[in-house]
Length: 337
Image (cartoon, rainbow, N blue to C red; front, side, top):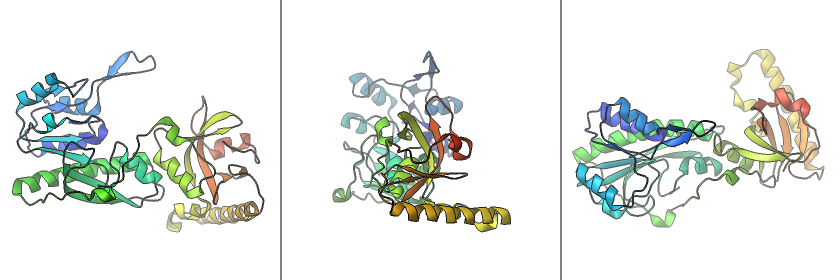
């Protein structure tokens, strides 16, 4: 049971390792296209068709007698879920004789809920991972079977972390399946006192508060990329911010061994300029969110703590652009927000 791309490697690894996948359950096809006139199948459905799985169920609702009867009719030994997007009833969970296991994109009990990948980034975590667990009636509250950790790099965005965890999730699932077969895995109850429940992501999650620190805003930008996207306002026009960096990150974003001598010199020159802007800003008394300086490849903005460099942005009804393309159209001294 799964819906988005995240679940596809889990299905692939089960099929490719000889497990008998008798059915795939995913969410209904959704309207797509500019006029929303065409239906698009979820990635898991497309994968199931490619694997020639005959039984594909797409219930609109899962809390119905009809869906329960369909599950009972399949007589599954085990149900595996990965980003299905629906909460299963106890009646459904009780159907398979071996139970239901879930592949979750965090190290439980941290980040229970629907957007663990995004919130790990927004909160500035340096480590996350995958948890496989037996499912119960709660939201990600079941006994843990296996965990696999993954380091989060300082500039990693939500799409990049999603892609890494998607593959790690499949590996964790395969290890879990083999461990269950050999009876080598222990069920470990979660410490509910350490649980972190996260809210769902909305478009408003991406609104930048310039009173936050540069680090917090940088984390918000990468945690909301690609959806919903971090945003602010420039002269009343909505402006999405797609890539940022703290000024001190400038020289560290590439190893010097990867740069030519001319590029190294350019980096060092920009470092001097950025540090100079930072020192002047600290004693200026300007409002948070003020565009302090526009350099060749970045726009430096004041925040509640430290300065933030905006590298890629997108104005309404426009495409994404590097500051090198659009910085000449921006005004220093303008306040964002």
